[in-house]
Length: 458
Image (cartoon, rainbow, N blue to C red; front, side):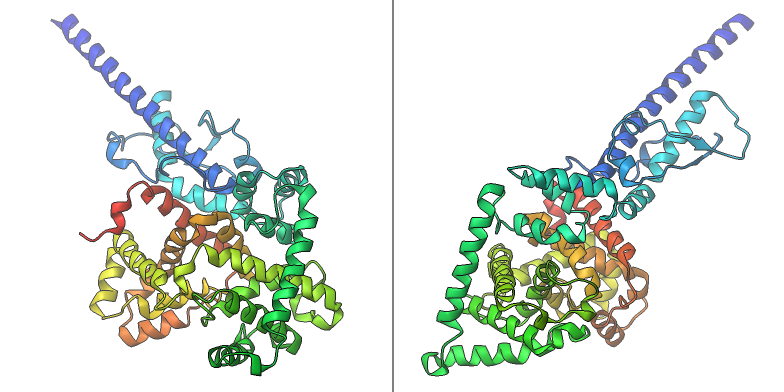
């Protein structure tokens, strides 16, 4: 009888061991996938499947097991190599005494790993610095080939582009400069001459040769240019405003379906700063257009004009009559916020706040008016890396941006909400806050992208 009891106990132990081993395998596999997805966050967004933030519903009750502290440094170099992350075995440190079997400890370590995956994504996004020497080497390798592989360039650019490489990278990402290096110089020369011809035909003419609508449009542009990025002194220079005016008016004449719409003036500014950076050094506060020759200014304007055209080609209905493209995305934003953070959504609805009242400007100006201007070019690295997918991905970025203040929003009444969302406290933001916004957007996109029903009403 005693022997039978011992056999039964032995069988139960074996079954429990098998269950634990099975759970260990599942958790290790899931966590390995999470780490690979984190690698993809640093490289770009070409990641299949979802990021697994938590799998606690599938875990057995192991509350009595040892709980170590899991630590890992996720620098770009770490995430860029798969040798360490493929096995899922990481260094574990603890001041507590280890108890239980090795398999039990391994199971608890795996549980801790899954629970901490969101924190790992946070750390990984902060480690992906555009100034990292490894990243510079990767950019250099991609750009130095006779034929630039645009998909690789997009993956790198998504996490930020080194400042001095940004002009070249942006021209390539937008399709303005050809990926074939042998053709690049000739194409740019031809496009710059074409812009000069457009200016002479459209802008450098007397008002007597313009229609009344064209005169009114030019006047509106002349009014808006001094208002563009008013907190950056560089844009108050008369030569800068004249360049903006030429670019915007020429673009509007060449795109009669939309013409000039207020907000497009903001969209030129990142291009102007990036292409000027090839010719002017130091802080933008010390830049002066008068230091440049007329030929250089003309080339910079041409690059801005063509890159603006390429950008807006993918968002044409954002700036046509009634701007239906923006209205559609604002609705999607409202639905996404409802699915991600229902308390915020409910509170805003209870207060009678419509998303159009604050988010329309976000989509119209692509957040340029909402964050410090020194962060705009970094944000636009990700925008341009998205390519044709940018309009839909903006919904995730703006949801992440809004929910940065989730707790705060739920405490405000209607009037306070309107004031708060129109004057968000981002003036002291650094790269860290921006990277967090992009990281969350990336995770939500990865989770929801294959489930479009999350954007439909129920």
